[in-house]
Length: 273
Ligand code: SF4
Ligand code: SF4
Ligand code: SF4
Image 1: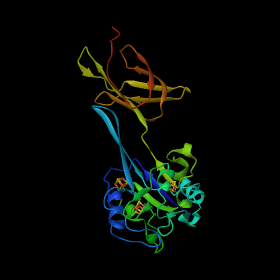
Image 2: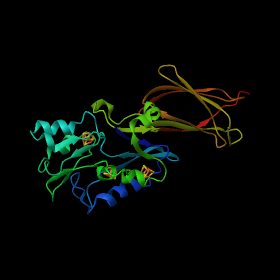
Image 3: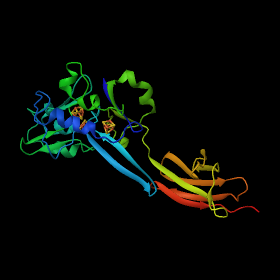
Image 4: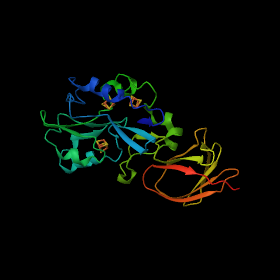
C-alpha cells in the first residue's frame, strides 16, 4: 500500500509540486483514471501557506495537500450513498480514484471531502481530484509532483519503507477519522519567541537560560543566541510558564496563554546590583 510523506522542514515552498501536477494533468487525458484538469480553478496538489508570528519574528509554514487517499474515505461513502458505488473506488495500492465515466454530475462528492481535495469541472460536469498519478504508478514511475520535488519535501512509496517516519508523523484533521495515507513530518505548529537585553549597557544578553514549562510540567530550555533571541518551536496551544535567568540579572517570569504563534518582543533585564 502506497503513502505520501511530506516533511515541512524540507519544504521550501517552491510550488514545483503544484506546477508539476498541472503539467501532468492539464490538457492530458489519463483514462481510465482522469480526464484533463482545467488550467485554472483546480489544485489537485494544493500548497497552503500560513504565516506565524509578528515582525520581526515571522515564519511561513507550507503544507502540501493532495487527496489523502483515505482508507475510510468519505467520498467513497458518499458515492455509495448516492447509489453509484463505482463512482469512487480504492485501488489495491491504496490510491482512491474518481471514475470519470461513472461520476458525472455527482456534485455531492465535492462537499463529501473534508480536505477540500475534490473540485468540480463545470465543462465536463465532473468531480475531479488527485489520482496519485495512477497512470505513472502503473508503469513503475513516481507521481509527477514527487518526481519534481527537488528538496525531498514530498516523497512517495510503499508504507513499509516509511514505517519509522510514519511513527513520528501526524495526519491532517485526525478528528475526521478518515485514515489518510498522506503523512506529515516536522510541522512547525506554534512558536514562542522573544529577545533578551540589558537596558543599562543597551546591549543584548547572550546565553540567558530561558525555560518554558507546559501545563503538564514538561520543560524545554534554550539559551538566548548572539542576537539575544530565543525560540521555542513546535508548540501546541495551551498554558505555559516562561522563566528567563541570566547571571547578574533578576529572573523574569511570565504566564502565557498560547493560541497563535507569539513574538513576545523585548525583555529588558534588571541588574541585581
Ligand atoms: S513539497 Fe517540494 S515541490 Fe512542493 S513546495 Fe515543498 S519543496 Fe516545493
Ligand atoms: S481526501 Fe477527500 S477525496 Fe481524497 S480520499 Fe479522502 S475524502 Fe476522498
Ligand atoms: S500525485 Fe499526480 S495527480 Fe496527485 S497531486 Fe501529484 S501530480 Fe497531481
